[in-house]
Image (tube, rainbow, N blue to C red; front, side, top):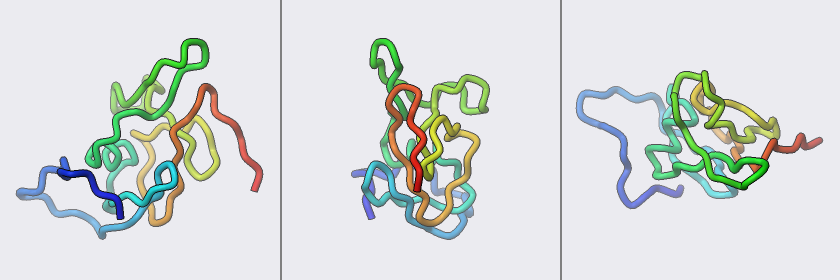
Length: 106
């Protein structure tokens, strides 16, 4: 599993869920049940979730409460999913989103 040089999670006094694996842009990333996708990515050092349509500007988590839509990514082939409102689950497939994202048929 891919882990950042330094896991940025606070560990003292925290009881975590089971350690699981999510796939982010084709790489395995460590996460824990009960974490949001945004929290898991942030803890693993990933700050960018998408790029904008017009200027290709990079965006990431901003409000953390589901109001701003800056943290959207394509999750399990569904674009524009708010990562701060979506909990991780084993084997979840997450992609950095380009512009509005594209629906993929399976």
